[in-house]
Image (cartoon, rainbow, N blue to C red; front, side, top):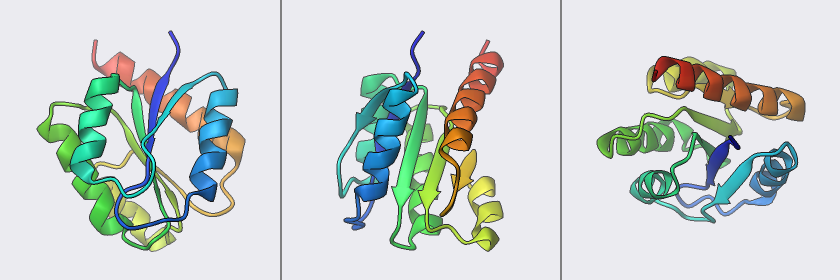
Length: 134
């Protein structure tokens, strides 16, 4: 079964070059990618994740608001009973990774993350999620 990934830009971050590269990378790796576009709310991401029946949610945040927005997306997903892995990519300082993990983020990708590692992590997280939900 093809992996379905929702890729979202939450908040007021208008930089979409990186998220477009990632969306193409995931598509080229055989995943079905749903891209929400810019300026999404945590609630709209959660509802789209449910509507599209995705396996994973990927957030692109370059605004520095990752410690605020990522936990809000995780909370919004859980509020609609969507328990899929959430990953965050962007300008994420190493010191913030533990806080994101505690907030429910499954993986983070900062500048210089390898494209191969991103694909492998998405595939691993999906496999782990499927195994745990049986």
